[in-house]
Image 1 (tube, rainbow, N blue to C red):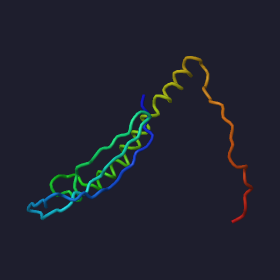
Image 2: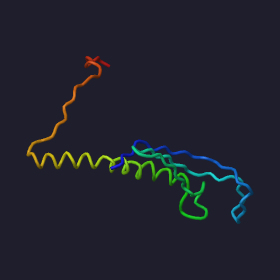
Image 3: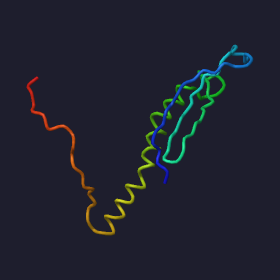
Image 4: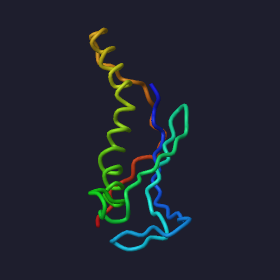
Length: 116
């Protein structure tokens, strides 16, 4: 299973070759959300084609950004860990004992409490 290592969102403005005119006005640049996703095996880029405001459709850049950040990205990172969690559960069921990886804490020593 490919594990997602990072997701980066960028808001970019790309100048248009010619102005884009509609009944709403004229645009000289396309502002869009670009996503960069890195996995164990590959690096990929994607574009959200929504606009700055929800003029032509119900989608817009801020809405797309929020959906990716608040819903899709957390689900994507959780899904990439499900294989490991499933393996732990299957091993616990097969062996009849709780699986605990051994680890040694190497962080700073405990601090004493100070009155505020």
